[in-house]
Amino acid sequence: MDRIDRMILSALQDNARISNIDLAQEVGLSPSACLRRVSLLEKSGVIQGYHADLSLEELGHSVLVLVHITLHGQSAEMMAEFEDAVQKVPQVLACFLVAGENDYLLRIAAQSVGDFGRIHTHFLSSLPHVLRMESNFVMRTVMNRGLNAEEI
Image (cartoon, rainbow, N blue to C red; front, side, top):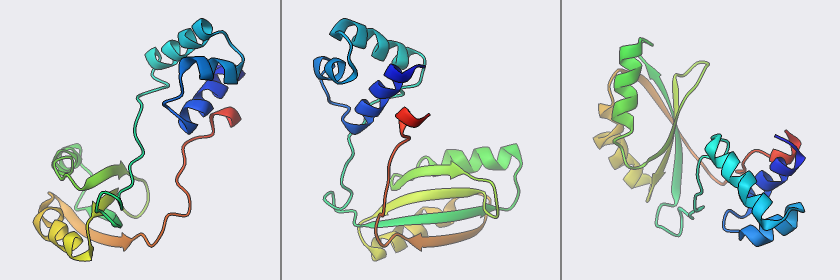
């Protein structure tokens, strides 16, 4: 990966809907050379997809909760069962296996604090092998960005 690839990645993170012509102009390539590079970045797995950045609040989910989960153990079977179950909870936006005091970190969208209570009661409390759960309510997002590709 060279400087131009990093420029392409940075531009796509800023605006994934940029036209190939505008992207090529921004990074100093011909449109065909730019398209080849983007295709190679996709095929190599560096670009895994293109996503719309949705406003949870505008969609009626104004409460964002980070939930720290500790399991009873860390056997491969326990972790696989937990991971299979958590993927079935539609309000879980992300699940991370983490090192440290807890085993997992979940990012959950809820319509209200009461709605999170419902999610906790009906979904989270029935996740397998959970020893402890700690919920942190996000008050505001200070920053949320991707990797600055031009600096790698």
